[in-house]
Length: 87
Image 1 (tube, rainbow, N blue to C red):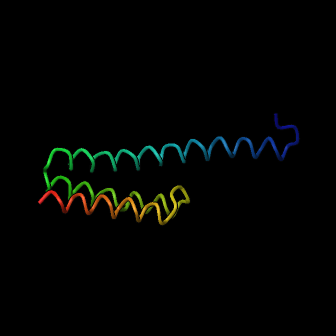
Image 2 (cartoon, rainbow, N blue to C red):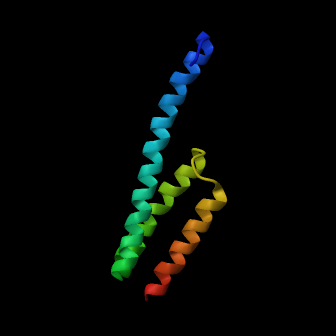
Image 3 (cartoon, rainbow, N blue to C red):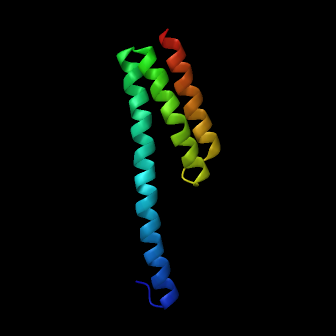
C-alpha cells in the first residue's frame, strides 16, 4: 500500500490513467470488431467504411501510447488486404 503522499498521489493518477486507457482500448477493439463483422458478412462497402472509421481510431491509440506503431500498421495492413480480397 502507498505510504508517502507522493506514492498516494501516483496511485490515484494510475487509477485514472488505467480507466482512460481501458476505455480507449475498448473503443479501438469495437471499431476493429466492426471491420471483422463486415468482412465476415461479405459486404465490401460496409467493410471499406468500417475500415476507414477504424484507421484514425487505431492511430489515435498509437499517438496516446496505447498501441505500438508497428502493431497498428500490421493490423491495418492485414485488415485492408482482407477487405480487398472480398471483391
